[in-house]
Length: 233
Length: 233
DNA sequence: AATAATAAATGTAATTATTACATTTATTAT
DNA sequence: ATAATAAATGTAATAATTACATTTATTATT
Image 1 (cartoon, rainbow over the protein chains, first blue to last red):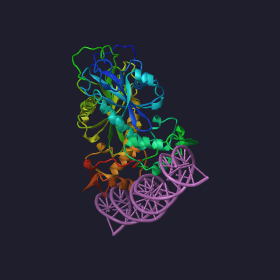
Image 2 (image 1 turned 135 degrees about the horizontal axis):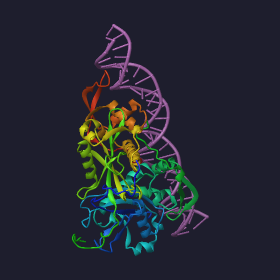
Image 3 (image 1 turned 90 degrees about the horizontal axis):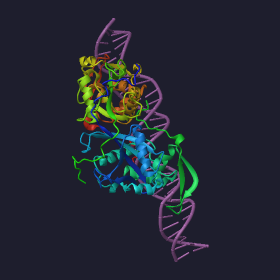
Image 4 (image 1 turned 90 degrees about the vertical axis):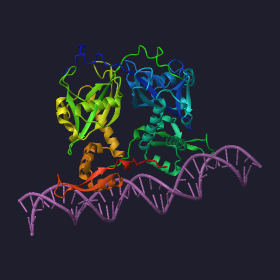
């Protein structure tokens, strides 16, 4: 079963060529609304249109690395939570070329991004309900990413990547309300969240949004588990 | 924001070329164990090795269509449940070429596949615990597909695509026991499954595996809903 | 110094879902 | 008539979710 690397064979020759791109669906949270980073294309094709930030994949990187490269170029950030969403491969999705795109969504701490760099690339944070029309199938990608984020948030403590290292319970409740697009009961929300045992309370209060102040919490990655099953047996 | 289709521009030119393949993780169920369809490569490269069934994607089809084309070629089946798993894009995953693969998993009714066609292509059904070593990263694909199947089965009534149109409750319980790799309590399993209200009972009994016979049920796609939420608000 | 204003923090009872567990039933073969 | 076999069923205990309103800590104002 040895594979001769340099051997000539016909298997890989004359394959129909398809370009492979990576597009990034970049979420951020400003303590009020869930936001998305998009940019105005400064070159052809589709110059002047709003677009997700993407790039063709390079020979020396996998899809995730390509996504992280893009993210670093635009925001200056490294070590970002980024996961594959799905591929977009409709034959006519890009009228300029036969090109499939691997959508990758990222959750970043919006206050940590390099504003100069973001500006330099013509990128802007939009609230999800004010998102402009995007090129190609990018609006669909955003919709799919949001669905995925909701799906994930239902069953696992996603979203901490959108918050600063220390955050308050009202803050994370607002985030979840944004993700689910509905109000949550604070007593039940806290009870549930704290029962999962992956939040560490500090004795420090954040008084930026109330006189009483809210205790700061920290995510305890050690204790993260996924606990809900329909069938336990 | 018009896009001039024939306009020459540099955006798509001289991109580093990456081949795009689709590999199919094909599950079947023979009323005892969960099985996987793999084939022995009859041509180079890697001739003689076991492999998932795949193909390079063509200009005139999207990834899902490519998967369905492959599936039809091998099994003769159409209208199969097939979903994207994820992409595999590690730089060195295929020593023969820079090639990314889009994994697609399919659930089929094993008794419906065209046995002659399957044989002709050198394909075999393997129980998951007897699966041979596969080429490249195909074992990882199988593992990921199984995880996905489990994940889906936890929250939604997946798996009916693996069963015949009419099936018994003991039959589907066995399937779920195979998916989860553990025994389930029949009273609780039935209670849960029936409470979801998407099974239609018939008055016909299947006596192929007991003297008493077990009632046949049918999946009611109209009533399929996904009902469990961590946060209901 | 007292009061008003504000958001944070908290508890409980009712409902629903999950779990653990053993017997009866329908049928066929002997 | 009996034995054998797998299918079908119920209930009580526990755990999770839901609905719902008041008190607390603090700051700003008078």
